Length: 126
Image (cartoon, rainbow, N blue to C red; front, side):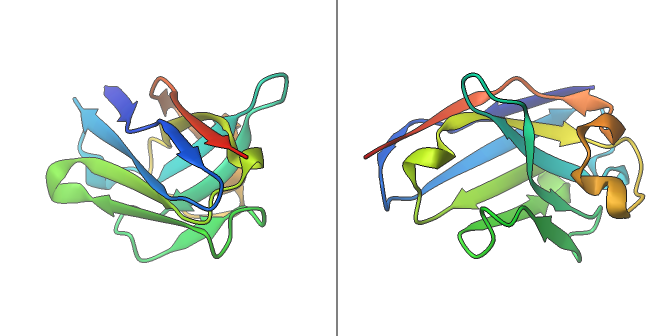
């Protein structure tokens, strides 16, 4: 199983960016997927989660209304559209696969995700 995140970059505050995550070696539709981020000197935090079929989504309060998580199971790809970016959104963004279709309160916890991609760096300038 391999997850590869890409699409990070440098954007000005107020701008937008879409990061993606390509999966291989797995049946993508069998997994709840999530995005997490880690800023320098801080702990990794939950950003957004999406159910196996995309019918349910969950967001951290800090990104609600600005970020949108989506997926294309036919193409084994996960997306995170980020609008109205703020300098505090600067971080490495990681995609993760839960390894099951369970959609519950633990979606926010990094501990339930079995598979992780490498981070893609998003830098928002002020």
